[in-house]
Length: 329
Ligand SMILES: Cc1cc2nc3c(=O)[nH]c(=O)nc-3n(C[C@H](O)[C@H](O)[C@H](O)COP(=O)(O)OP(=O)(O)OC[C@H]3O[C@@H](n4cnc5c(N)ncnc54)[C@H](O)[C@@H]3O)c2cc1C
Image (tube, rainbow, N blue to C red):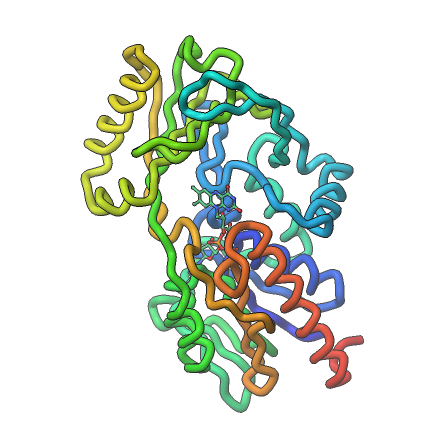
């Protein structure tokens, strides 16, 4: 059975692992963080879970919808029927989102069930030679040789890993990403301004989105998530975390019109939060000679669905390529 290494356990890497294991490949997935999900990661705050990356599994194509519906049937994803508003809070509207049961990262865990997952393993080198494709960790230690390696990291982190294929590295360099600060506040009581509304987005100079995370199905407590705007985040990119958390808490208190006294709080900096400009590639990045590929939200379509699509398109090409070589039983 062909052995494939995938670098990155975000939705792209996890989807690719899911497709390849289902087609008979042996998949090893290497992730530098402690958990899975990448920019779909979740975290704990006190005794509660909260989504720290993309807050919901949104997409628009019927294919993505069908794919997610399969996970609803499995009890891994569920529909969150809730109420949204703009920042004026004058007009509430009903909205439906798909979210992971309990937390979004559970969804990537499920996708990875057939693969061997190596967390807290940062890959430093991918190199193709006569014996296959080798990977080394960031200390230079040889991990192993594989029949193929796929880089499923955000574009800036993919560039050094694609060194063996300068053409691919150059493509990754063409993508542009933005940074983003996300803060979480656990409260004893729901602020009165947030009564009857769970998702606030739209026009605001500093806030991008405010979500009452604890309103998601099966979540407890009162947990507010604040996503700052890109320009605000970029202008505070290297600021002290504790001071920033305090600043965001004060901004939120001002907007809510009441002083907040969180029982727990947390801040996270996403250096490569969203892909603003993809490499606009209409074909999957796969080099059959080197046995190296890449997928993710920077290939063609930004966002969760774009990452998912790029992994599926790459899976089709890899499966065809190994089938044609007669190495897939
Ligand atoms: C706060 C926030 C809100 C968002 N909101 C939305 C939204 O509303 N709608 C939407 O469509 N999208 C949204 N996005 C973007 C969406 O989350 C991403 O486009 C998508 O998750 C990207 O998936 P991916 O698999 O391509 O990359 P990632 O999820 O980034 O996965 C890549 C993984 O590779 C790992 N990695 C990197 N380098 C290495 C290495 N050297 N060795 C090992 N592992 C490595 C990383 O740790 C990461 O886990 C949001 C993102 C953030 C952060």
